[in-house]
Amino acid sequence: MSITVGLRGRAEATVTPENTAAAVGSGLVPVFATPYMAALMENAAVHAVQPALEEGQGTVGTRLSVTHDAATPVGMRVWAEAEVTAVEGKKLTLSVKAWDEAGPIGGGVHERFVIVTDRFLAKAEARKGAV
Image (cartoon, rainbow, N blue to C red; front, side):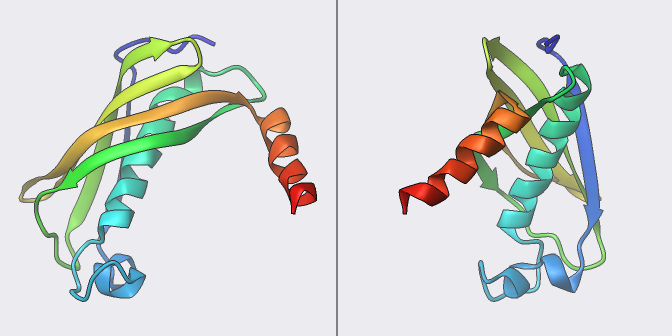
């Protein structure tokens, strides 16, 4: 694993009727939904770290603390950027920020953990036997 502080990633989308608060149920208005902004931030984080991982490794999000500060209407482009700010063993901390064409719309902190994908999935599947 060669993840270092300063690695950056980006993800972008266009606001459509399908990714609004009204469509996802996180509100009643047709503006970019906070859950979709959070997902865009996580996607930027994945783009920041995945190229630095070894084959068979991945990351999973474990914490996301963000604010959604401005509403973005349907038709506008939105993007998120993530930057690795700390690496503590398998724990990664990233700064995440989001914008639309008019300016900043949100930001915060995101934590991810490096996993061995096959082992992680096997452990998840084993939860079925606990039911």
